[in-house]
Length: 469
Image 1 (tube, rainbow, N blue to C red):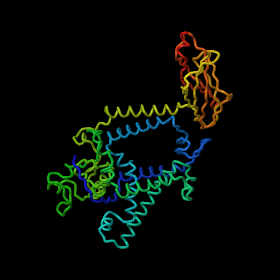
Image 2 (image 1 turned 180 degrees about the horizontal axis):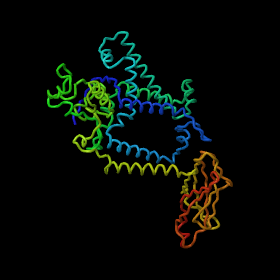
Image 3 (image 1 turned 90 degrees about the vertical axis):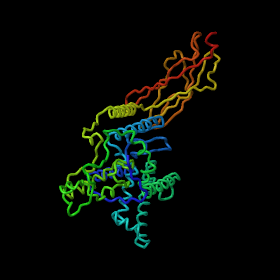
Image 4 (image 1 turned 45 degrees about the vertical axis):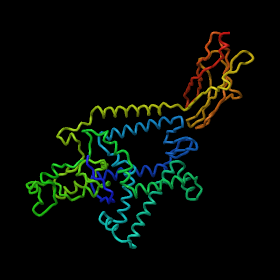
């Protein structure tokens, strides 16, 4: 797999075409989502009215109508597994399109390049400006570029912080020096990292820091779509050559053994990582398709057919049909469906009441004066709903047992609140009974006119000398 790794600065040239338009569309959707979600209001009937809010203080994540509690942290593991499976699935089908269209580094670098182009001009003008001596015009353009980069970095960092608090209130506090220290620290950190990664390092992040390009080949096969240059058509037997007076039409070029590539270099100039796709598939290629747009633009200008550079597969290049439906893609697809289904089922079937019961082990049991054995338990309840729950606690599987909740006669749990209850269970052990008897705490709640029952298994312990006396 040849590659052209170069350490000189890259000046991406602008280009128009289908893939550039697709990248703009993804860019608008991604930025629109990222910057507007913290400001979107959402009426839950209780709790904060921000649509997306990661409330660390209350230990809750609000995602529209879904409220994620610490007990639901396994959903995060499921989401990470699903994201990995989707990445493998897409990579097996279409190579590194995630890098080319959806990666944060790509999205932010695109905007920073656009800012640079807006201030300093097109590729040639930027190269000329960098080579020019430091005069007022150069200082002005360079300074304005970096200033706009810093502004964009600051807005990016501040927008991230707004996900962790009420956005309007946090903005007001931020600029009145009343926000928490964490808000300023996080904004400063993200401002610095965004400025360095998207403005200074840019493609170096893809070339040296990102591990994805290093293991992507494991997921590639002969049916994976990659950006490829048609060498046979482009170079013929005599290679490629620029348009000349005697070699301007296609027939004369073919007679001279030259291919359709006129060696304009446009495909190299638009590449955000600075590679020459004509040298073959390279790990630096992020499959953004901009070189395809560039080449198609040139082919259109000379009146030749498009497709000298295109998305294709190794199997297609050999004249066979690309297979998208095969064991690997079916396996990834099935795994995605299973994980997605499990996550969806878990969300839809989650109850309004979360409960845990732990036995107090010091002492493990107490012998009462009437001969009964007493065990103590700590019951923890978490109300995940937006209405007050009345809890009716009972026992199941422990005949003759007495449940003592102390002075609590009626247990009410406010919306999105937690409660700890100390419970005592007393039981006269049977002579032929077991040292540990399993039973179940049963908690009934009334939610929206429907009865919900939550069960939690536990065990009752008696001393061994009380069993075989």
